[in-house]
Length: 347
Image (cartoon, rainbow, N blue to C red):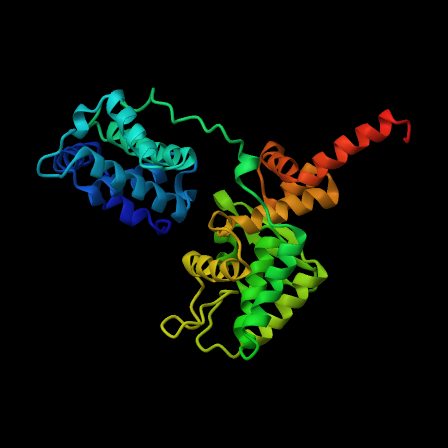
């Protein structure tokens, strides 16, 4: 019986046995070899973390960048000021302080710490370290609540955003239809960036009026198609036929170099950013996740049901969806206004 995909590569890797792990890990730690250390961390996450092989490429990319940042802090490989096998909690605390003094936001500092903590765990797994020196280090507290930092677009802004592709590309219906669909998949259905670009044509079920979405952790959910998104899908699938080389991907690149290939998350982000910029939105709202936050907030406003929001967005817990209730300013305004009406005997 043949091995599952990736198994052969794993068994042949430098991390396949405790002896190899320790030998290669010691060498990489001594040389501050960032590529090998990142490879060790990646292997550890895919084998030993709670998500194992379901760890997303975006997460691995973010953690790799955190490791690079930390190795820059420890000093050049030929003469590091802090050796990886001699780190203390204070070294991590100094690093966190430096990042804060450099102006990094608490959330970014926290992400970097968690990324490097996975490297420390991987070095323990490789028997290079006896324990994780960062284990007792806490990231800086963020005084700003999440719902105050992560704003959503208003209904008016979302309508204006969806109208932009056709306005800016009146002679390019293919681009306009693709870009409008991309914005709607995020801003109306609440799909994550990876979920949007991961869609295949076969995931669209017009007869059943639904879209099959492969979400975080390999979980699949079925999202109903409202009439507006269905129309955008039909329009794009017609336009897509004119794109040469298109394979199974629903959304494809239209650039000369990658025409017909699956649109990447970076490509989708670049497209969205161009429309955000044209609409005059501040840079802190330019992320693709802004569309998902917008969908979540508007879904909660329409239903007042966090269970429905959690189900549609693919949240494992209703508590994750609770932020959308906090982000809906109108909900709070209606609550205090109703208190006044009750006090005045109007209800």
